[in-house]
Length: 88
Image 1 (cartoon, helix red, strand yellow):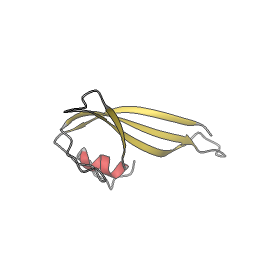
Image 2 (cartoon, rainbow, N blue to C red; image 1 turned 120 degrees about the vertical axis):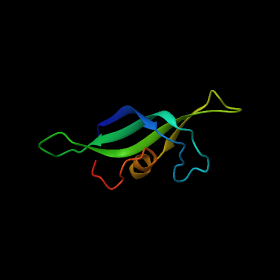
Image 3 (spheres, rainbow, N blue to C red; image 1 turned 30 degrees about the vertical axis):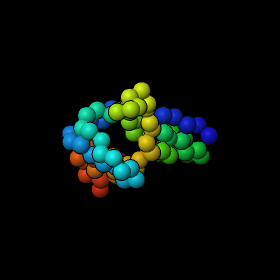
């Protein structure tokens, strides 16, 4: 099985929350990691998303801590102000 990870930066225009996490995160830029696996047996190269993580840097008592939070694609689109119904 072949895996790959894509990194990108997204900008959240306002403070936001994510499903499954109680705290509100501040607006700003965040790194997003998308893990994908190769779909084998096709006549062309194609990948399927297997996981999406939002990188959240610590604050308060834990400023050096970095957390990878598993998130859903629809939650990411909603938090960035995109339409979660659009095909990706």
